[in-house]
Length: 404
Image 1 (cartoon, rainbow, N blue to C red):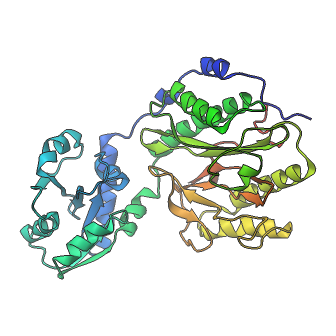
Image 2 (cartoon, rainbow, N blue to C red):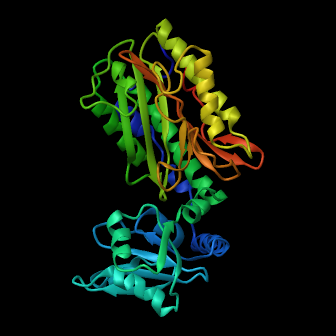
Image 3 (cartoon, one colour):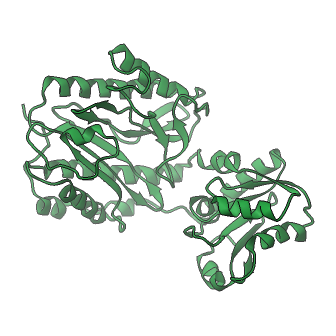
């Protein structure tokens, strides 16, 4: 039988049918940034950390609300345990820093010929902090940490992950609501993309449509990313250099998402255009079984590792693998999601992070069959006080992936 919900429509028809949904989500408000700072300060005091450096990027935004892209110039902020924030930036950027500033703090600037790392250390000296641990945002480029180390030996630079991840891993109800709206939008885009398929369509045509569809739903930036793979191309998890065009009876893998109010969606659907053969059907059904095994292993108080272990056990029990061997699962079962598409925790056997309410992560135990195809069903989970909860309802069946 032909797959339900696949093909039969046009790009124009699908775009015209879309009604915006992005307005249903509310951005993070200023009071929540202050709540995050309060938690970070509490963690710093517990760990006897003198300050945490927040590098331009998602960590700086998470705690201060300031959006600034990282570059070759040092731009960031020092957060002290008493809640004080001290921004560091080039002098010529001071006006723009003030314009982007949400949470108020003192600005320290240097001219282009001056050393920003000396300025960094001088802030501690001015506060009579002569020694101690300084937590450095783990996304900070080496040239910055090296630059600081070259001019001082009094302070111990440590990884800020216990502070940054210690806050960001646990999403608030407001964050989850934004992610939910983004996921809902992307799932509808997935359904629309499936309907425009026809033999001979190129991956680029589908990618362009998905971008336009996200925009029509009210996401100005369109797709945050998009992977479209047909046939044997789908056996390569993140794609190929020159994607092939769609042919009858081929596997279709579409992995896409958008960024809404700075939070990201990420959903993969895989199905067959036309009639599925026995091997495609067998692997698709096993992929769904594995995805549910992973979901059931996501229990409060258990380590993230248990989820990955459950995925591989299911596959091994069905003759695939073991470990990362193919046919089987070549990568981790999933990843955390939030302001970054891949963030803590990671759903892999060496991640012992304890699952707790507010943790959000993908469930995507892809099965790759070399030289034939790959099947990836990806939905995300958020942990509640009652256990795991799906952001999006998993694919229904290979003959009716969207449960029509």
